[in-house]
Image (cartoon, rainbow, N blue to C red; front, side):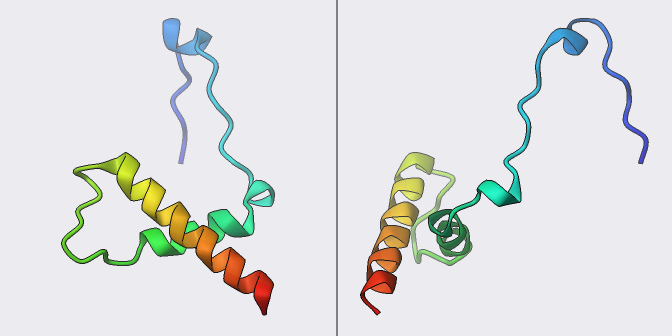
Length: 69
């Protein structure tokens, strides 16, 4: 796939580098898989911040349980 070369103002705006797979933590990994899980009646599109908090709270609980074993 050929990418179009940016022109004008778009060429001046610095783009963020994507996160490297080497920078992903176990917490991020667990949260990613938890976020794919269905949350019953909860629709993440309605409240994204609440959804993210619940995902990472559950991922934290998984990490705590993992360290016990």
